[in-house]
Structure formats: structure tokens, C-alpha cells
Image (cartoon, rainbow, N blue to C red):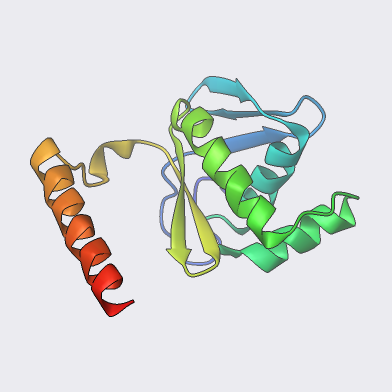
Length: 137
């Protein structure tokens, strides 16, 4: 079977990710990045479900099977730490639900970009919400 075709939906998959658990590195789009052992295991767990989302508890289960006990909070922190490194090889991790994550591999040009005015609007809205929270108590 062609690895660039999703076995579940039959659509063309935008990119290919290779996760090397021995060297603790990931390669996509002809670029490689080194990761910590835990980050590599988390990325491998996410890659197993690609292009579908992965639940945090299933990632924790995979880590436990490999002798790495990590709480859901530690996994969330690790994913936040991984995002900048993975972005350099064209891989993004999105939150696709309350406790699920999904990989995006390939050209990032089709992901909506925010300009500075959008960011300022979000900052103003956040300040309003923070003031309302203080008033409500």
C-alpha cells in the first residue's frame, strides 16, 4: 500500500514523518530535529494515529508500556515544549479537543495566519474577560 495515502479515508497525506526512537530524532520534509527520549516517544505515539487525533490517556499508556510513567499534565507540558522544534521541520501538533492532539505534517501555508491586529483584538478581549472574572469573583 502507498504510504502517502491514508488507509482510513483514502486521501493523499501531505507529508511523511520518520520518528527514530534509537537516535531520538524526527525527520520530515528532508529536515531533521533532535528530541529528548520522552518527546520522541510522544511523537511516535502521535504518529501512530496520524492523521487521526490521539487521546492524552492513550499517549500516557504508550509511554507506560515503554517504562516511562508520565501524567497527562506532563504530556501536555512536553507537547508545548516540542512544538517549536517540530515547527522547524514542518510538523505541527494541534489540540483537537479537550484532551486530544493531532499531527499536521507538510506545507503549513494552508493554515490560517494571524496578523498583529488579530492578536491585539484577542489581547483586548482577554483583558475584558479577566476584569469580568474579578467582578464575578
